[in-house]
Length: 200
Length: 200
DNA sequence: TTCTGTAATGAACATAACGTTCATGAGCCA
DNA sequence: TGGCTCATGAACGTTATGTTCATTACAGAA
Image (cartoon, rainbow over all chains, first blue to last red; front, side):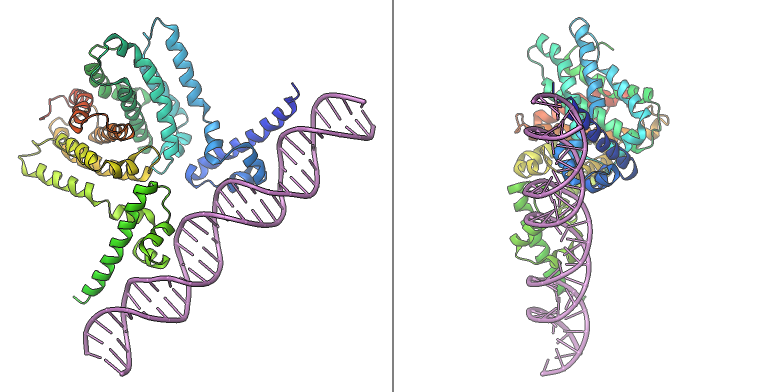
């Protein structure tokens, strides 16, 4: 492969851009970071940026792998167990904990004045996982009253709403407590609709 | 009062701006409407706009009274009954119906590519009402496991998530069905946490 | 080592939307 | 009619965006 050199250069440039963005997000919040800010911070020129990324969102989403990786792990973990016997609610706890550890970054991203885009993206990723998890149940009983799509959509929203509240209110509870609340609120309705109890 | 004339002029100008915005929202979606678009449509100049409103959001939110009015009515209706014996879930059905009737506008506002701001605003209004509704229950049993704030936040998010899904998927169910789903999903968890069943 | 093609780089430019300024004019009252 | 107030819109300054293009740096071939 003759592109190893470019890979290295590219890798370095992208890393610089990404680090600059993250630092600036913590300082000013995602919305108010401008492309020029990123360029100044990373000591790069405009076209360098635009030859790598389409825009600021593009740069950000490419660095949004943490969550995605975690979700992938969760998904394969699920596949390992016999036919979806694991639960997506492990995931919720993991995410609450992750948010607690990185709460400054999370607040800058998820907090009140922050990005629709971030939430939208997170919602998409989450509801995909949840839908995959719920599929077995919709096969069992062909005619679910409520489609897995709605359920996944609703569950993802419920989770994100609690996460947002938690962050906006400066983490008044532990991650474990938040997860407990999340389960208390959503599991009963979920079980009522699916018609069976779910593995914890 | 010597300002009746200005009131009339002002009223007319504002009406023109508001109508232009609404028409444009239906054509292009809220995000991509520019102030200049509005001005062209209404045949007005820039400073006219900025002497009336701070920006596009300001103009829009001032015309966002429909929902607010409905919520106010609901609130006073609640106050009429003896100590909050009414239910906020009447409201959910009303809102689903309202969305069904005005689905073109709703889709332009609430749909996939639309405004964070709209959702944020709606969420604020909704959770305010819900919190007011839940207060009696938090007084009864001083130590609720979950604070009314979280509950209101979560309920508003749950409702908006179902509304969004419904609109994004071109109203596959009736408003009544959507309301039923909303109740099936949220009531069990709510009752579990409040510790008592709620009036329907 | 020198040559060469590919791709990264940044200065400069073109565009788009924003919000403000200021001179003008319309409406109203005395 | 004179005079006041306030809405009005043309023009302007500003900020951020994304693109162009000539230059530069590098890795591999000779």
